[in-house]
Image (cartoon, rainbow over all chains, first blue to last red; front, top):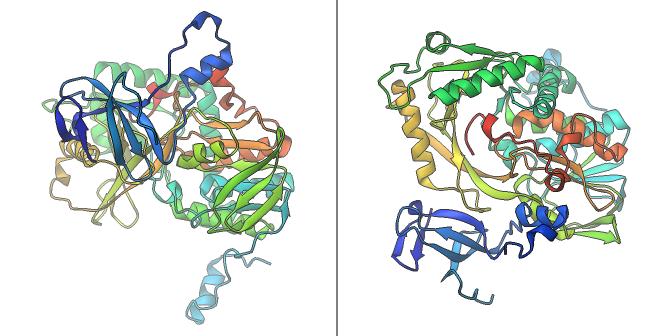
Length: 91
Length: 417
């Protein structure tokens, strides 16, 4: 359990948020040309990093907006938060 | 030579104040080379080593464990054993394990305290009723014992449940698998370790894997904190840390690692002599032999390796427990902990070869791996020894995420993930 600084609402309890998994997985531009392996990679395979990970979060019980977070999954420390569409901070 | 545990050895050792018991397993330094190395000294890893030695005559093998054996999810789960899964593939896998459980204490000469006290799954809405009835029929077709119970029969089987129709999610019925139950989790790890060690398996604790050495598409060995170990076969049984090991080999897995919590109460006299699980309200409870209520909470929805978890998850579970069992309202909770579970998109495990020759993964057990420990070890040993899956774990291959032939057990799981 931790506090999350929503870029739109400010600091709120993590209970208000929904985790949306790994960030920056781009939807294939030409899905009809994808092989089964490429589909599996897009749909199912995840980095699942122990350490600094880029992920999406949603302020589900607040403004309901999506944003990105850089978080260390080994100690739940939040390194950075940035809006959708913004460039991820360099690590 | 391993001394047998018996009533006579107990009396003999009592005479010397229990100071002369033989070591249950050795503490060897790693050799330079093994025929196979298992990464992860939990129940599944130790069972894999045990069956590799016992059924496949692979005695020159090692289990490497970064902490102490059974200190991960094997020692953190709520010890529930059942096999009432919906799909044929899952039923085959979990019932194979349950059949081994039934003779495990005798086989290992180690009391794993397997107790077939029954597992009851409750229905709280009409969809639950339909799902559980369907699962009961599916179980019977697969030769797994299952009965559907009315609300009155639920009350009769476990009288402390509040079956009043006035509560928020009233009990509408339930299923019962009588062969299901619990076992002592630590004893399972210790029993398999002792058995494997007796057949020559090296169990190397405090030995963390730092890298996997590949030569093209085949495995050459592993880098560890105790040096390089040469081997052609590596079986990874690292639960929540499977993706970490996979990354070392340049593989990606369809897993997300999340904290799953459990808690126990202060010990009290026997009050609940079965295991009761409720999917809809996410509450499950049993009572340990020490008298503690053993309660399983849910997973957090974010990836984390912290072995902690959020407070509201525990709170939600306890709210449900109190509504279903008002008698527990003044119980004090004694301890709470978390374990890191590796969850697959289809909530079924992976026991599989990989694209790298000699590298095998046994992972993705998510929130319910303990029950499968003996079967998982047996089938994974078969897969490693023959470089081919057994027919019971063939469906649980890594390629199913490419082919789309998933074993989607989300709907049939005892509690929602």
